[in-house]
Length: 400
Image 1 (cartoon, helix red, strand yellow):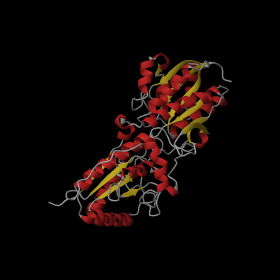
Image 2: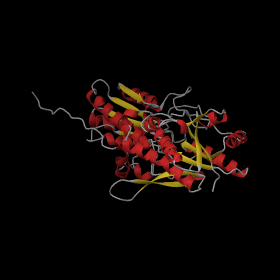
Image 3: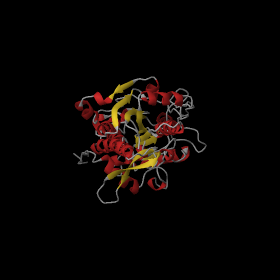
Image 4: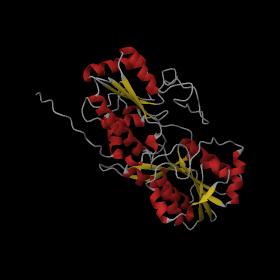
């Protein structure tokens, strides 16, 4: 059992519209745990912690903590600091200085690597520390969890956007013959697939999907576009930002990488996948079209946040403190879907080693044999997460 001490919480990487619900869950549960004296927050992640940019979360009013649950973006501020070996002695020094025994970070796979390294370093130096990760990513690419908090709301955002843009594209087909909508997600197409929820009728958007899990084939893609145009009179395409050719070259032609060696799609030296596809189609067919690139908007759109997502994000924060109470460390909280006709999830856990610096692609059974759309099993997976979408009417073709 750990000696009584303080807790610190941080947020890292890109935000989600529910990441603060996880923060609220940790704070509320930590206040009830007699093994924790004070609750601190890192301003701007591990980078802020090393600069001793620390605030007192335990002193925040109850109203503020309650409102956190429905506040988008990262209330503590985030960073994308790549942890270096030389950072670890400084971090341990500060853990001791502030008597921190409970170390919680909310983030994605790079964040889980940070917790894992800090916790293991502390252990190697004889300092007892509980390091627990809380999952967060709109990309839904963390191993060991049914889905990640933030994904359902981002999936809803994407599906709603493609649905509404699809109505526009259908009605503007005599002006613009196609539209390309780009989803975030470097190596996984979960958000691309989720846009299929926009489709109520065969001619509804989307028509063609381009997944990071499948090599992009230009000739096949253009053939699909032609077939779709001939059938519907317009084409709605959804692509992942990280789609690549068979040789691994990004369709976006970007060569810029971030601190974690991830390709920066659309950065200087490249365009974006959506713009590249737009240019291909226009050059091949002479069509006029649009491209729509949302970038970080799905990460912070409070108006499209799914209630289920808020509740599960909060539950994951609570689950992190529960694991710490049990004396566990080196784990990430997970969501485990219960096998029943009615959807429900409970919290579980997975070792940080199994999650850190990895990406979980969509399973093969979720993508059709042609590689350009999803399958029914994927829809069964994603429907309960996103909730009901609105339906829009069409005028009947009653000739005058």
